[in-house]
Image 1 (tube, rainbow, N blue to C red):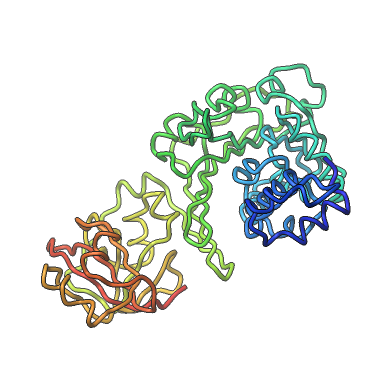
Image 2 (image 1 turned 120 degrees about the vertical axis):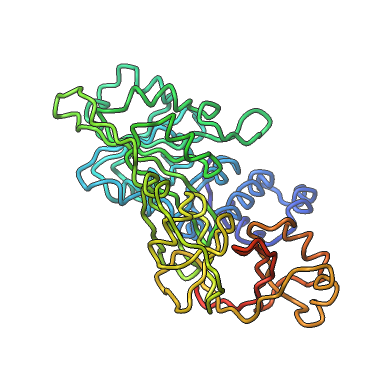
Length: 410
């Protein structure tokens, strides 16, 4: 489908309309495929904050709303470029909307985009041409067939990237790697050792189980944006094809875990550790509450760096299972949020009945506490929002408390 001037103008003019009403009144707009236009408006709404540079280019065509849901965001696609070099020849085996292929193409020598959906391939050719990209070759093919088939230019590829689809029949979300398309367990052994492999997976996957399935991984990157965990990236190294060697590289059973979070102002928080260090770490629990409270960002929590974070930053855990920390002095480099404590409130039934008179509005979080945040808010009748923060948690002496504080950073 071509984005004609008429269609582009219609999309711009009706971008803020009620789309259901727009479809019902389609008969009023002669010469315009209103259903197609509505599909483009919905897709563009999905990428407005996700891929801002594409959103502002109204020439681009989006083959499906699902493609915009599954694609990488601009900030995470840019992050992945640090894994490649200028002279790399990369193959994206799961081309999709082409976001990753596009951003990779801005750094590497050449990109081969592979996608089994013909409509996606047509859209990728169309969009990449409009974007002035000349170093991407689009191939309409199944990923496994491409790797195992007789494709002449595969011999020149030295980096493979995959983002297996995580939705099954009926738009059901998939999280096990064997349930995704393509099945990573089938294609992994075909690529391991000879190529560098970058795999994007669901952050819902269990990290320990994943590393058992993919023991060749040498790095795991967990990427969050505004404290929302977005991507889990596996990096496995290999010898470049031109070396002629088929020997497997030494396995690294203890990969480095890199936890990344982009704050609302675009600052990158980074924390690195090894799972073996986390397992052997011994930390002290806080006997007394300090002046400051620390909450690790979602990437650190996902990685399970509970003890490593305490040791790295010199803070004390409130409880072995609470994953909140305290200190008397602020640690600006902490990978997470920092709060200044105003009051420690013992939790009780009476507290639930009376606290709203003193704190009518607050942001409530729970860590190692018997009630979920919504239930706690309902019992205390405290409205959401405002500048006050309440952390419901358990201290080292197993007492349940509410910690009232204000956010210092970020």
